[in-house]
Length: 479
Image 1 (cartoon, rainbow, N blue to C red):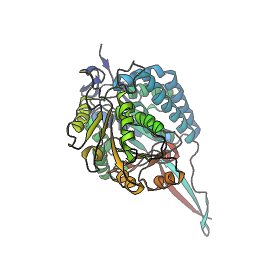
Image 2: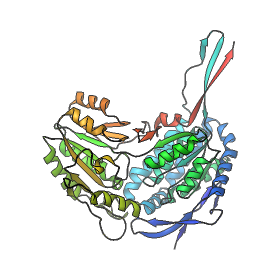
Image 3: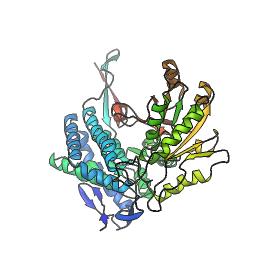
Image 4: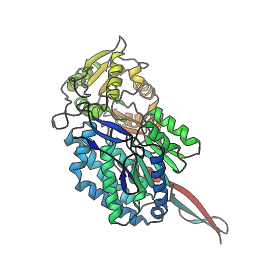
């Protein structure tokens, strides 16, 4: 029996106004299991109107009211954990047990973090900075926010979007990816119930399903004061160009090509174990995934052998298999993209493990390790977004830094060494928004996440991410 998802606008679930739909595919099987609205201009207009009408009430609510709402949303998500995990896993093919522990649990924690942040806005103290005048700083919500979430972490990225925006007093129109609407639509139901219980305007949170054109209509709409997207570099450039037409604020979290720099004194066993998870979790569909391993030449061969063996021992499979690290790639297009990178490898490259599709049903791809690569190779420079790790050797610290920084992305990185001074030098010289030392891909709500260069700008999580959804006003009065 097919499932039907609907938009959520001003507290009501509805089909697209013109009845158009999109198929939703289970990536574990490749079969269509649901439909969702293909929203057009009329649907976007309706959602923006609802958000704009509800915004003044929410803007003028006290931080304690916003905190209570978010805490109740977190509690409701926790109470419906089984439904959220099932919805997320069906759309993405992710292992059920890992979705619960590694994604749903942090998502709930992050909603609770932003509930607390709602009551902790900080600013420069009031005072007399000019004789006879007193200045104060106001932090205010920016207004209606158009938000576009990706397909790699639909549930988690929805939280990263709506939680800080609502905590700061904004109204939200959120669009999930066309391939992964399920958990976001369920979140709309959860949030709507909380807002109804607290007698708050339900128009502060709206969900619009659709494709890239729907997202474009949202970003170009005159109502939003801010556009936020997590997605590809191409999508980010398009959003920035569209937003420039009426000078909207833009928040971009885009691609990544994270290096893991392994020095000769590193604990190799620990590094291999951690990088297998850091490179292959979620089928490598993570902007912070350890996609590029840079290894000192003195331990290169030993490390490649160990990494290839660990990759060969790593399993992919269906969501209900508790022995797998990751599930399928998200869609047929992504499977083709990952396969294409391997098919186009230069002659000097060596596939040490994997390098092929797994099975003939669904979009599964084997854990893959490729060595013998050069800095200007396509697979080193461009984001694969799949379970593929490349290995390069370096001669010294300077070359390691040059290789690590020598890509267009600058989101995350890691350094593996027992030398504290070296770790501090590397953390200074690596041009990435996050540098992990002897670990990889660990995130907490209290610390910021975001990059530089073509990885975008703006921060998710933390007080910095919260402040991104506020604007600053100076008020000066004569004494």
